[in-house]
Length: 120
Length: 110
Image (cartoon, rainbow over the protein chains, first blue to last red):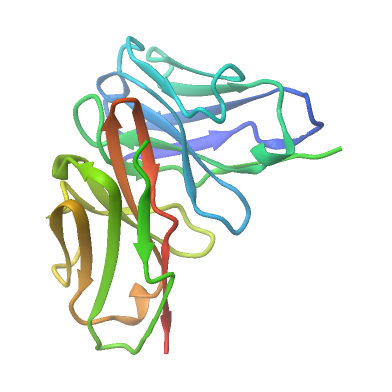
């Protein structure tokens, strides 16, 4: 059974940093591109970042470029999101999600999310 | 940058009725990269349709997707109580490389 479990969320002050993790199991993690998607309270879905299976290709939304860094450790079946210079508008539930096939495309499995709150 | 506009914002229907949800793109989208998701309160999104018209694993056949170019549709043939949720369309664009979600359609019980 495919499982994605996010962790690392919490309350952080504006300008602070946080590192999210996503532990994957039930599939060959090293064969899939992975993604972070966020959802602000009461709002819709916003794509944040994507990373290819071997980390060769990395993409970011303009809203986080230069502040967030996506990475992965295939030996540990883990995906990460380093978030720096956090702003109030980064407050959201952050989901990790697997790309169903190939380098890009739809997301077939999602974690349950971790809440990040940026507030003083 | 491609913008996806979903309509209506809210759709009020009764169980057993047919639901038609629209997703319109600001410029042509590859059908291969158009997907639909369902999200219930407090839950993660679930992939329903990929490639504009292919059902994801385990998705009932009352869900169908269609469309091409700039206009895409998600149809639920006969609504079941568990179908009332928020639905999002999503596309992947290669220039620049990014994903875009529509703002969502809330399907509520009438």
